[in-house]
Every structure is written in structure tokens, then in C-alpha cells.
Amino acid sequence: MLTTSQRGRVPRTAHSPATLVPREPVTREVLRADELALRWGVSEKTLERWRNEGRGPKYMKLGSRIGYPLAAVFEFERAAGRISTSERDE
Image (cartoon, rainbow, N blue to C red):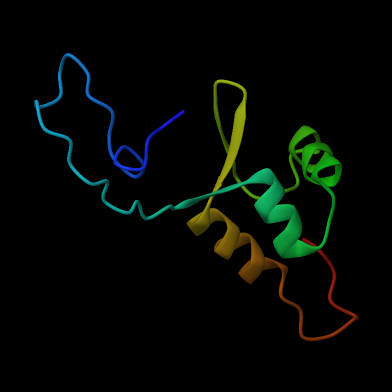
């Protein structure tokens, strides 16, 4: 368990300086599958099925983790926009 003075700090390793420094906030540019499912109001299973069918937004896989780059999510959302119910998918 971390002590109060260790929380929010980078642990010391053989490659880190002798003093602990505060962590800088990281700007995330990738959504996890659960975050995208929540954003769109669909299940994670739906996103998984779309990945298998090749019909969802572009994604990346690092090890066993799935991530959706924000740029790909925004592009997919733009392409999904419709003006009329008579429009057909191409």
C-alpha cells in the first residue's frame, strides 16, 4: 500500500532519478471499448461484433486491449450523419 507521500508520484526505478517527481497529466487520444460503448449507448458486445464484421470505427489492439483513436471515432460519427431517412448506405 502506498503511503500518503507516495500517492501521485512516479515510482523509483533503476532508470529514474533519485528524487520522486509529480506525474504530469496525460492527454488521452484513445477511448477504451467500455468508454465508446457508453458514449454511443451500445454494449461492448456490439462493438466486438462490429469489429468482427469490419463495420465499426477503426480500432487498435495493443496486447489484449482494444482502443479507438478519437480521430477515428469522430470520423465514423461524421460519416454516420444523415439528413433524410431515405438516404441509403453506400
